[in-house]
Length: 516
Image (tube, rainbow, N blue to C red; front, side):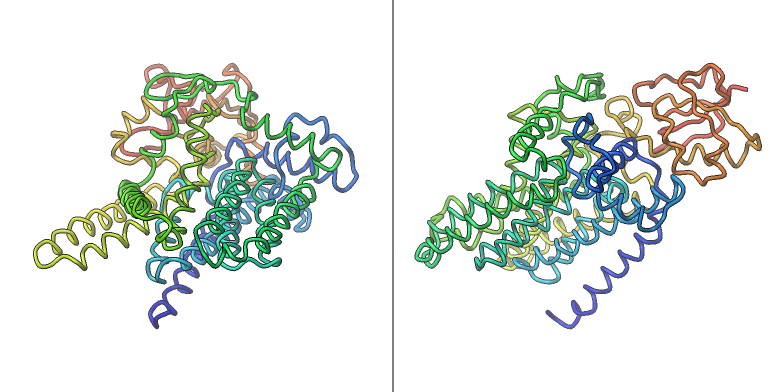
Protein backbone atom coordinates (compact mmCIF):
# COMPACT_ATOMS: atom_id res chain seq x y z
CA UNK A 1 0.00 0.00 0.00
CA UNK A 2 1.41 3.36 -1.03
CA UNK A 3 1.66 6.34 1.29
CA UNK A 4 -1.34 8.12 -0.24
CA UNK A 5 -3.62 5.08 0.13
CA UNK A 6 -2.60 4.71 3.78
CA UNK A 7 -4.20 8.10 4.28
CA UNK A 8 -6.98 7.90 1.68
CA UNK A 9 -8.51 4.56 2.68
CA UNK A 10 -9.21 5.34 6.37
CA UNK A 11 -10.17 8.91 5.43
CA UNK A 12 -12.77 7.77 2.88
CA UNK A 13 -14.30 5.23 5.23
CA UNK A 14 -14.31 7.69 8.13
CA UNK A 15 -16.06 10.35 6.03
CA UNK A 16 -18.60 7.84 4.75
CA UNK A 17 -19.31 6.61 8.28
CA UNK A 18 -19.68 10.18 9.53
CA UNK A 19 -22.07 10.95 6.67
CA UNK A 20 -24.22 7.93 7.46
CA UNK A 21 -24.36 8.78 11.17
CA UNK A 22 -25.41 12.31 10.25
CA UNK A 23 -28.25 11.53 7.83
CA UNK A 24 -29.65 8.12 8.90
CA UNK A 25 -32.50 9.80 10.79
CA UNK A 26 -33.71 11.78 7.76
CA UNK A 27 -35.35 8.95 5.79
CA UNK A 28 -39.02 8.06 5.80
CA UNK A 29 -40.68 4.81 6.84
CA UNK A 30 -40.72 2.20 4.07
CA UNK A 31 -43.82 0.16 3.35
CA UNK A 32 -42.05 -3.12 4.28
CA UNK A 33 -40.47 -1.97 7.53
CA UNK A 34 -43.34 -2.69 9.96
CA UNK A 35 -43.78 -6.17 8.47
CA UNK A 36 -40.04 -6.86 8.59
CA UNK A 37 -39.97 -5.82 12.23
CA UNK A 38 -42.95 -8.05 12.97
CA UNK A 39 -41.06 -11.00 11.49
CA UNK A 40 -38.28 -10.30 13.97
CA UNK A 41 -40.73 -9.92 16.85
CA UNK A 42 -42.36 -13.27 16.10
CA UNK A 43 -38.95 -14.96 16.05
CA UNK A 44 -37.96 -13.17 19.27
CA UNK A 45 -41.05 -14.38 21.10
CA UNK A 46 -40.44 -17.92 19.86
CA UNK A 47 -36.77 -17.93 20.85
CA UNK A 48 -37.46 -16.49 24.31
CA UNK A 49 -40.33 -18.91 24.91
CA UNK A 50 -43.01 -16.21 25.13
CA UNK A 51 -45.20 -18.05 22.60
CA UNK A 52 -45.11 -20.33 19.55
CA UNK A 53 -47.16 -18.15 17.22
CA UNK A 54 -44.26 -18.11 14.75
CA UNK A 55 -45.13 -21.65 13.62
CA UNK A 56 -48.54 -20.54 12.33
CA UNK A 57 -47.56 -17.05 11.23
CA UNK A 58 -48.20 -16.19 7.57
CA UNK A 59 -44.63 -14.91 7.02
CA UNK A 60 -42.96 -17.62 9.08
CA UNK A 61 -40.86 -18.62 6.06
CA UNK A 62 -38.90 -15.36 6.08
CA UNK A 63 -35.38 -15.69 7.44
CA UNK A 64 -34.73 -13.55 10.51
CA UNK A 65 -30.92 -13.59 10.71
CA UNK A 66 -30.92 -9.78 10.68
CA UNK A 67 -34.44 -9.01 11.93
CA UNK A 68 -34.01 -10.94 15.19
CA UNK A 69 -30.85 -9.04 16.22
CA UNK A 70 -32.60 -5.76 15.37
CA UNK A 71 -35.45 -6.61 17.74
CA UNK A 72 -32.94 -7.62 20.40
CA UNK A 73 -31.23 -4.24 19.93
CA UNK A 74 -34.44 -2.27 20.41
CA UNK A 75 -35.04 -4.18 23.66
CA UNK A 76 -31.44 -3.62 24.75
CA UNK A 77 -31.68 0.13 24.16
CA UNK A 78 -35.19 0.38 25.69
CA UNK A 79 -36.76 2.08 22.68
CA UNK A 80 -40.07 3.41 23.99
CA UNK A 81 -41.67 4.98 20.90
CA UNK A 82 -42.22 3.86 17.31
CA UNK A 83 -39.92 6.64 16.10
CA UNK A 84 -37.05 5.54 18.36
CA UNK A 85 -37.50 1.95 17.18
CA UNK A 86 -37.37 2.78 13.48
CA UNK A 87 -34.54 5.29 13.83
CA UNK A 88 -32.50 2.64 15.63
CA UNK A 89 -33.31 0.18 12.84
CA UNK A 90 -32.20 2.73 10.24
CA UNK A 91 -28.94 3.30 12.11
CA UNK A 92 -28.16 -0.39 12.50
CA UNK A 93 -29.14 -1.16 8.92
CA UNK A 94 -26.65 1.45 7.73
CA UNK A 95 -23.95 0.11 10.06
CA UNK A 96 -24.46 -3.39 8.70
CA UNK A 97 -24.17 -2.06 5.16
CA UNK A 98 -21.04 -0.17 6.21
CA UNK A 99 -19.56 -3.47 7.38
CA UNK A 100 -20.44 -4.89 3.97
CA UNK A 101 -18.64 -1.98 2.29
CA UNK A 102 -15.54 -2.70 4.38
CA UNK A 103 -15.77 -6.34 3.29
CA UNK A 104 -16.18 -5.21 -0.33
CA UNK A 105 -12.94 -3.24 -0.12
CA UNK A 106 -11.16 -6.28 1.34
CA UNK A 107 -12.62 -8.44 -1.45
CA UNK A 108 -11.63 -5.99 -4.21
CA UNK A 109 -8.11 -5.69 -2.77
CA UNK A 110 -7.61 -9.41 -3.32
CA UNK A 111 -7.59 -8.69 -7.05
CA UNK A 112 -7.07 -4.95 -7.64
CA UNK A 113 -4.73 -2.19 -6.49
CA UNK A 114 -5.66 -0.15 -3.38
CA UNK A 115 -6.64 2.83 -5.51
CA UNK A 116 -8.85 0.80 -7.83
CA UNK A 117 -10.44 -1.06 -4.92
CA UNK A 118 -11.20 2.28 -3.26
CA UNK A 119 -12.73 3.45 -6.53
CA UNK A 120 -14.92 0.36 -6.42
CA UNK A 121 -16.13 1.40 -2.99
CA UNK A 122 -17.11 4.73 -4.53
CA UNK A 123 -19.07 3.00 -7.30
CA UNK A 124 -20.81 0.78 -4.74
CA UNK A 125 -21.97 3.46 -2.34
CA UNK A 126 -22.70 6.16 -4.91
CA UNK A 127 -25.34 4.25 -6.87
CA UNK A 128 -28.31 6.35 -5.67
CA UNK A 129 -30.82 3.57 -5.07
CA UNK A 130 -28.29 1.48 -3.16
CA UNK A 131 -27.28 4.56 -1.16
CA UNK A 132 -30.84 5.32 -0.06
CA UNK A 133 -31.91 1.72 0.62
CA UNK A 134 -28.87 1.18 2.82
CA UNK A 135 -30.67 3.06 5.58
CA UNK A 136 -34.00 1.21 5.71
CA UNK A 137 -34.11 -1.86 3.43
CA UNK A 138 -33.11 -4.66 5.80
CA UNK A 139 -34.07 -7.44 3.39
CA UNK A 140 -32.43 -6.50 0.09
CA UNK A 141 -29.52 -4.39 1.34
CA UNK A 142 -29.06 -6.87 4.17
CA UNK A 143 -28.57 -9.67 1.66
CA UNK A 144 -26.25 -7.46 -0.41
CA UNK A 145 -23.95 -6.97 2.57
CA UNK A 146 -24.15 -10.62 3.58
CA UNK A 147 -23.30 -11.74 0.03
CA UNK A 148 -20.20 -9.55 -0.07
CA UNK A 149 -18.98 -11.04 3.20
CA UNK A 150 -19.73 -14.59 2.00
CA UNK A 151 -17.95 -14.12 -1.34
CA UNK A 152 -14.95 -12.72 0.53
CA UNK A 153 -14.83 -15.86 2.68
CA UNK A 154 -15.29 -17.96 -0.49
CA UNK A 155 -12.30 -16.36 -2.19
CA UNK A 156 -10.17 -16.87 0.91
CA UNK A 157 -11.28 -20.50 1.23
CA UNK A 158 -10.48 -21.24 -2.41
CA UNK A 159 -7.08 -19.54 -2.17
CA UNK A 160 -5.93 -21.58 0.84
CA UNK A 161 -8.43 -24.17 2.13
CA UNK A 162 -8.24 -24.76 5.90
CA UNK A 163 -10.81 -25.96 8.38
CA UNK A 164 -11.02 -22.47 9.92
CA UNK A 165 -11.72 -20.88 6.53
CA UNK A 166 -14.25 -23.60 5.72
CA UNK A 167 -16.06 -22.93 9.00
CA UNK A 168 -16.01 -19.15 8.52
CA UNK A 169 -17.33 -19.49 4.96
CA UNK A 170 -20.07 -21.85 6.18
CA UNK A 171 -21.14 -19.32 8.81
CA UNK A 172 -21.19 -16.48 6.26
CA UNK A 173 -23.22 -18.56 3.79
CA UNK A 174 -25.70 -19.66 6.46
CA UNK A 175 -26.22 -16.08 7.60
CA UNK A 176 -26.92 -14.94 4.03
CA UNK A 177 -29.35 -17.81 3.42
CA UNK A 178 -31.11 -17.21 6.74
CA UNK A 179 -31.44 -13.54 5.84
CA UNK A 180 -33.04 -14.18 2.44
CA UNK A 181 -33.45 -17.41 0.51
CA UNK A 182 -31.63 -16.26 -2.69
CA UNK A 183 -28.44 -16.53 -0.64
CA UNK A 184 -28.65 -20.28 -1.27
CA UNK A 185 -26.82 -19.59 -4.56
CA UNK A 186 -23.63 -19.49 -2.46
CA UNK A 187 -23.63 -23.28 -2.02
CA UNK A 188 -23.55 -24.25 -5.72
CA UNK A 189 -21.18 -21.34 -6.33
CA UNK A 190 -18.75 -22.78 -3.78
CA UNK A 191 -19.01 -26.29 -5.21
CA UNK A 192 -18.60 -25.03 -8.79
CA UNK A 193 -15.38 -23.15 -8.12
CA UNK A 194 -14.00 -25.91 -5.91
CA UNK A 195 -14.47 -28.30 -8.87
CA UNK A 196 -12.84 -25.85 -11.30
CA UNK A 197 -9.93 -25.27 -8.92
CA UNK A 198 -9.23 -28.96 -8.40
CA UNK A 199 -9.43 -29.64 -12.14
CA UNK A 200 -7.59 -26.65 -13.61
CA UNK A 201 -4.98 -25.73 -10.97
CA UNK A 202 -2.22 -28.38 -10.74
CA UNK A 203 -1.38 -27.74 -7.07
CA UNK A 204 -5.06 -28.00 -6.12
CA UNK A 205 -5.48 -31.14 -8.21
CA UNK A 206 -2.73 -32.89 -6.24
CA UNK A 207 -4.32 -31.96 -2.91
CA UNK A 208 -7.91 -32.55 -3.97
CA UNK A 209 -8.68 -35.34 -1.46
CA UNK A 210 -7.74 -33.20 1.52
CA UNK A 211 -9.63 -30.33 -0.09
CA UNK A 212 -12.64 -32.60 -0.61
CA UNK A 213 -12.76 -33.27 3.12
CA UNK A 214 -12.74 -29.53 3.75
CA UNK A 215 -15.54 -29.04 1.21
CA UNK A 216 -17.54 -31.70 3.04
CA UNK A 217 -16.87 -29.91 6.32
CA UNK A 218 -18.11 -26.67 4.75
CA UNK A 219 -21.36 -28.32 3.57
CA UNK A 220 -21.98 -29.97 6.94
CA UNK A 221 -21.33 -26.79 8.92
CA UNK A 222 -23.47 -24.74 6.52
CA UNK A 223 -26.45 -27.00 7.20
CA UNK A 224 -25.83 -26.83 10.95
CA UNK A 225 -25.45 -23.03 10.97
CA UNK A 226 -28.57 -22.56 8.80
CA UNK A 227 -30.60 -24.55 11.32
CA UNK A 228 -29.03 -22.76 14.28
CA UNK A 229 -29.62 -19.22 12.98
CA UNK A 230 -33.19 -19.73 11.70
CA UNK A 231 -35.66 -20.33 14.57
CA UNK A 232 -38.49 -21.48 12.30
CA UNK A 233 -36.39 -24.49 11.27
CA UNK A 234 -35.84 -25.74 14.79
CA UNK A 235 -38.97 -27.90 14.91
CA UNK A 236 -38.49 -29.43 11.43
CA UNK A 237 -35.24 -28.47 9.75
CA UNK A 238 -35.69 -30.20 6.40
CA UNK A 239 -39.45 -29.79 6.01
CA UNK A 240 -39.56 -26.12 6.95
CA UNK A 241 -36.53 -25.27 4.81
CA UNK A 242 -38.11 -26.89 1.73
CA UNK A 243 -41.37 -25.08 2.47
CA UNK A 244 -39.56 -21.75 2.75
CA UNK A 245 -37.61 -22.34 -0.45
CA UNK A 246 -40.75 -23.20 -2.43
CA UNK A 247 -42.76 -20.30 -1.06
CA UNK A 248 -40.15 -17.61 -1.58
CA UNK A 249 -38.88 -18.83 -4.96
CA UNK A 250 -42.42 -18.48 -6.35
CA UNK A 251 -43.86 -15.79 -4.13
CA UNK A 252 -47.62 -16.31 -4.48
CA UNK A 253 -48.57 -14.01 -1.58
CA UNK A 254 -47.86 -10.91 -3.66
CA UNK A 255 -51.06 -10.54 -5.65
CA UNK A 256 -50.97 -7.06 -7.11
CA UNK A 257 -49.81 -5.06 -10.10
CA UNK A 258 -46.79 -2.95 -10.99
CA UNK A 259 -46.51 -0.10 -13.47
CA UNK A 260 -44.19 -1.29 -16.21
CA UNK A 261 -43.63 0.44 -19.55
CA UNK A 262 -46.83 2.40 -19.07
CA UNK A 263 -49.11 -0.55 -18.26
CA UNK A 264 -50.37 -2.01 -14.99
CA UNK A 265 -49.10 -5.59 -15.12
CA UNK A 266 -49.81 -8.31 -12.57
CA UNK A 267 -46.64 -9.33 -10.73
CA UNK A 268 -47.18 -12.98 -11.76
CA UNK A 269 -47.40 -12.02 -15.44
CA UNK A 270 -44.38 -9.76 -15.84
CA UNK A 271 -42.34 -10.25 -19.04
CA UNK A 272 -38.93 -11.85 -18.84
CA UNK A 273 -37.14 -8.56 -19.47
CA UNK A 274 -38.57 -6.81 -16.39
CA UNK A 275 -35.39 -7.07 -14.23
CA UNK A 276 -33.11 -6.34 -17.18
CA UNK A 277 -34.93 -3.10 -18.01
CA UNK A 278 -34.95 -1.98 -14.37
CA UNK A 279 -31.22 -2.63 -14.00
CA UNK A 280 -30.59 -0.72 -17.24
CA UNK A 281 -32.61 2.37 -16.26
CA UNK A 282 -31.60 2.74 -12.60
CA UNK A 283 -27.85 2.00 -12.64
CA UNK A 284 -25.54 4.90 -13.58
CA UNK A 285 -24.69 4.48 -17.27
CA UNK A 286 -20.92 4.68 -16.83
CA UNK A 287 -21.03 1.86 -14.28
CA UNK A 288 -23.01 -0.32 -16.69
CA UNK A 289 -20.67 0.47 -19.57
CA UNK A 290 -17.56 -0.34 -17.58
CA UNK A 291 -19.11 -3.60 -16.35
CA UNK A 292 -19.82 -4.61 -19.94
CA UNK A 293 -16.17 -3.91 -20.80
CA UNK A 294 -15.15 -6.08 -17.84
CA UNK A 295 -17.42 -8.91 -18.98
CA UNK A 296 -16.09 -8.66 -22.53
CA UNK A 297 -12.51 -8.76 -21.30
CA UNK A 298 -13.21 -11.82 -19.13
CA UNK A 299 -15.01 -13.71 -21.91
CA UNK A 300 -12.17 -12.95 -24.32
CA UNK A 301 -9.62 -14.33 -21.87
CA UNK A 302 -11.89 -17.25 -21.05
CA UNK A 303 -12.11 -18.58 -24.60
CA UNK A 304 -8.37 -18.36 -25.13
CA UNK A 305 -6.78 -21.39 -23.45
CA UNK A 306 -8.87 -21.59 -20.29
CA UNK A 307 -6.70 -24.16 -18.46
CA UNK A 308 -3.71 -21.85 -18.68
CA UNK A 309 -5.63 -18.69 -17.81
CA UNK A 310 -8.19 -19.93 -15.29
CA UNK A 311 -6.33 -18.94 -12.14
CA UNK A 312 -5.66 -15.47 -13.53
CA UNK A 313 -9.34 -14.80 -14.23
CA UNK A 314 -10.99 -16.82 -11.45
CA UNK A 315 -11.86 -13.65 -9.54
CA UNK A 316 -13.73 -12.22 -12.54
CA UNK A 317 -15.40 -15.59 -13.17
CA UNK A 318 -16.71 -15.59 -9.60
CA UNK A 319 -18.05 -12.07 -10.12
CA UNK A 320 -19.70 -13.09 -13.41
CA UNK A 321 -21.30 -16.15 -11.81
CA UNK A 322 -22.45 -14.06 -8.84
CA UNK A 323 -24.11 -11.61 -11.22
CA UNK A 324 -25.38 -13.81 -14.05
CA UNK A 325 -26.60 -17.00 -12.35
CA UNK A 326 -29.21 -15.33 -10.09
CA UNK A 327 -30.25 -13.01 -12.92
CA UNK A 328 -30.63 -15.94 -15.33
CA UNK A 329 -32.59 -17.91 -12.72
CA UNK A 330 -35.04 -15.03 -12.33
CA UNK A 331 -35.40 -14.42 -16.07
CA UNK A 332 -35.68 -18.07 -17.11
CA UNK A 333 -37.64 -19.19 -14.08
CA UNK A 334 -40.07 -16.26 -14.34
CA UNK A 335 -39.71 -15.60 -10.63
CA UNK A 336 -42.15 -13.12 -9.10
CA UNK A 337 -40.53 -9.69 -8.83
CA UNK A 338 -42.00 -6.32 -7.96
CA UNK A 339 -40.83 -2.87 -6.93
CA UNK A 340 -38.12 -2.71 -9.59
CA UNK A 341 -35.11 -4.99 -9.13
CA UNK A 342 -34.57 -4.52 -5.42
CA UNK A 343 -34.83 -8.29 -4.80
CA UNK A 344 -31.72 -8.59 -6.98
CA UNK A 345 -29.68 -5.82 -5.35
CA UNK A 346 -27.39 -8.50 -3.95
CA UNK A 347 -25.82 -8.92 -7.42
CA UNK A 348 -24.87 -5.25 -7.67
CA UNK A 349 -21.44 -5.64 -5.95
CA UNK A 350 -20.56 -8.21 -8.63
CA UNK A 351 -21.41 -5.63 -11.30
CA UNK A 352 -19.03 -3.17 -9.60
CA UNK A 353 -16.22 -5.75 -9.51
CA UNK A 354 -16.69 -6.32 -13.24
CA UNK A 355 -16.64 -2.55 -13.75
CA UNK A 356 -13.26 -2.43 -11.98
CA UNK A 357 -12.01 -5.07 -14.39
CA UNK A 358 -13.31 -2.86 -17.20
CA UNK A 359 -11.41 0.15 -15.86
CA UNK A 360 -8.25 -1.93 -15.59
CA UNK A 361 -8.71 -3.17 -19.16
CA UNK A 362 -9.04 0.37 -20.50
CA UNK A 363 -6.00 1.48 -18.50
CA UNK A 364 -3.88 -1.36 -19.91
CA UNK A 365 -5.15 -0.65 -23.40
CA UNK A 366 -4.21 3.00 -23.02
CA UNK A 367 -0.72 2.03 -21.90
CA UNK A 368 -0.22 0.13 -25.15
CA UNK A 369 -1.43 2.99 -27.32
CA UNK A 370 0.66 5.96 -28.31
CA UNK A 371 0.10 9.61 -29.00
CA UNK A 372 -3.32 10.73 -30.20
CA UNK A 373 -4.96 7.32 -29.72
CA UNK A 374 -4.04 7.26 -26.04
CA UNK A 375 -5.34 10.79 -25.54
CA UNK A 376 -8.58 9.96 -27.35
CA UNK A 377 -9.17 6.89 -25.17
CA UNK A 378 -8.34 8.79 -21.98
CA UNK A 379 -10.67 11.67 -22.85
CA UNK A 380 -13.52 9.37 -23.90
CA UNK A 381 -13.33 6.93 -20.98
CA UNK A 382 -12.37 9.51 -18.35
CA UNK A 383 -14.98 11.98 -19.58
CA UNK A 384 -17.74 9.36 -19.47
CA UNK A 385 -16.87 8.25 -15.95
CA UNK A 386 -16.25 11.71 -14.46
CA UNK A 387 -19.34 13.28 -16.02
CA UNK A 388 -21.49 10.40 -14.80
CA UNK A 389 -20.00 10.61 -11.31
CA UNK A 390 -20.69 14.37 -11.26
CA UNK A 391 -24.30 13.83 -12.38
CA UNK A 392 -24.88 11.08 -9.83
CA UNK A 393 -23.29 13.10 -7.03
CA UNK A 394 -25.51 16.06 -7.89
CA UNK A 395 -28.59 13.83 -7.70
CA UNK A 396 -27.47 12.34 -4.37
CA UNK A 397 -27.16 15.81 -2.84
CA UNK A 398 -29.92 17.71 -4.63
CA UNK A 399 -32.65 15.13 -4.02
CA UNK A 400 -31.71 13.87 -0.56
CA UNK A 401 -33.34 11.86 1.00
CA UNK A 402 -35.06 10.56 -2.14
CA UNK A 403 -32.11 8.93 -3.86
CA UNK A 404 -34.37 5.87 -4.25
CA UNK A 405 -36.14 7.75 -7.08
CA UNK A 406 -33.07 7.88 -9.32
CA UNK A 407 -33.42 6.98 -13.00
CA UNK A 408 -30.69 7.35 -15.61
CA UNK A 409 -31.26 8.99 -19.04
CA UNK A 410 -32.36 5.68 -20.61
CA UNK A 411 -35.65 6.01 -18.70
CA UNK A 412 -36.43 9.43 -20.21
CA UNK A 413 -37.34 12.59 -18.30
CA UNK A 414 -39.20 12.34 -14.98
CA UNK A 415 -42.57 13.03 -16.55
CA UNK A 416 -42.05 10.03 -18.84
CA UNK A 417 -40.79 7.97 -15.93
CA UNK A 418 -43.89 8.81 -13.89
CA UNK A 419 -46.12 7.56 -16.71
CA UNK A 420 -44.16 4.36 -17.31
CA UNK A 421 -42.66 3.08 -14.04
CA UNK A 422 -43.37 2.85 -10.32
CA UNK A 423 -41.54 5.55 -8.40
CA UNK A 424 -41.94 5.87 -4.61
CA UNK A 425 -43.30 2.36 -4.19
CA UNK A 426 -42.51 2.32 -0.46
CA UNK A 427 -44.14 5.63 0.48
CA UNK A 428 -40.96 7.19 1.85
CA UNK A 429 -41.97 10.67 0.65
CA UNK A 430 -45.00 10.73 2.94
CA UNK A 431 -42.87 11.68 5.94
CA UNK A 432 -42.13 15.11 4.48
CA UNK A 433 -45.80 15.68 3.67
CA UNK A 434 -46.89 14.72 7.18
CA UNK A 435 -44.24 16.94 8.76
CA UNK A 436 -45.44 19.85 6.63
CA UNK A 437 -49.02 19.34 7.82
CA UNK A 438 -47.87 19.08 11.44
CA UNK A 439 -45.99 22.39 11.13
CA UNK A 440 -48.81 24.31 9.50
CA UNK A 441 -51.95 22.85 11.12
CA UNK A 442 -52.29 23.49 14.88
CA UNK A 443 -55.26 21.10 15.30
CA UNK A 444 -54.93 18.48 18.02
CA UNK A 445 -56.45 15.82 15.75
CA UNK A 446 -55.69 15.65 12.03
CA UNK A 447 -57.55 13.00 9.98
CA UNK A 448 -55.58 12.03 6.86
CA UNK A 449 -56.04 9.62 3.97
CA UNK A 450 -53.17 8.04 2.05
CA UNK A 451 -54.00 7.43 -1.60
CA UNK A 452 -51.37 4.73 -1.33
CA UNK A 453 -49.82 3.75 1.96
CA UNK A 454 -50.84 2.75 5.44
CA UNK A 455 -51.31 4.02 8.94
CA UNK A 456 -47.82 2.86 9.93
CA UNK A 457 -46.38 5.75 7.89
CA UNK A 458 -46.92 8.03 10.87
CA UNK A 459 -44.63 5.92 13.08
CA UNK A 460 -41.51 7.72 11.86
CA UNK A 461 -42.82 11.04 13.25
CA UNK A 462 -41.97 12.46 16.66
CA UNK A 463 -44.29 11.12 19.39
CA UNK A 464 -46.04 14.49 19.75
CA UNK A 465 -46.76 14.80 16.01
CA UNK A 466 -47.68 11.13 15.67
CA UNK A 467 -50.33 11.46 18.37
CA UNK A 468 -52.12 14.16 16.38
CA UNK A 469 -52.61 12.21 13.16
CA UNK A 470 -55.56 9.87 12.58
CA UNK A 471 -55.10 7.82 9.40
CA UNK A 472 -58.37 6.84 7.74
CA UNK A 473 -59.17 3.92 5.48
CA UNK A 474 -61.27 6.06 3.14
CA UNK A 475 -61.40 9.64 1.90
CA UNK A 476 -64.62 10.49 3.72
CA UNK A 477 -63.84 12.45 6.88
CA UNK A 478 -60.24 13.20 5.94
CA UNK A 479 -58.87 16.72 6.17
CA UNK A 480 -55.89 15.95 3.94
CA UNK A 481 -55.08 13.50 1.15
CA UNK A 482 -51.49 12.44 0.53
CA UNK A 483 -50.55 10.69 -2.69
CA UNK A 484 -47.31 9.38 -4.11
CA UNK A 485 -49.00 8.46 -7.39
CA UNK A 486 -48.75 4.70 -7.05
CA UNK A 487 -51.88 2.74 -8.04
CA UNK A 488 -54.09 5.68 -7.03
CA UNK A 489 -52.35 7.81 -9.62
CA UNK A 490 -55.19 10.16 -10.51
CA UNK A 491 -54.46 13.85 -10.79
CA UNK A 492 -56.38 15.71 -8.08
CA UNK A 493 -55.17 19.15 -9.18
CA UNK A 494 -58.34 20.05 -11.07
CA UNK A 495 -60.70 19.37 -8.15
CA UNK A 496 -58.67 19.68 -4.95
CA UNK A 497 -56.48 22.28 -3.29
CA UNK A 498 -52.84 21.20 -3.51
CA UNK A 499 -50.93 22.76 -0.63
CA UNK A 500 -47.59 20.95 -0.83
CA UNK A 501 -45.59 18.75 -3.21
CA UNK A 502 -42.20 17.16 -3.69
CA UNK A 503 -40.79 17.39 -7.20
CA UNK A 504 -37.89 15.76 -9.01
CA UNK A 505 -37.03 16.95 -12.47
CA UNK A 506 -40.04 19.26 -12.39
CA UNK A 507 -42.40 16.32 -11.81
CA UNK A 508 -44.45 15.83 -8.65
CA UNK A 509 -43.63 12.60 -6.83
CA UNK A 510 -45.71 13.32 -3.72
CA UNK A 511 -48.51 15.81 -3.09
CA UNK A 512 -50.67 16.93 -0.18
CA UNK A 513 -54.24 18.11 -0.81
CA UNK A 514 -56.40 19.90 1.75
CA UNK A 515 -60.13 19.09 1.74
CA UNK A 516 -61.36 21.63 4.28
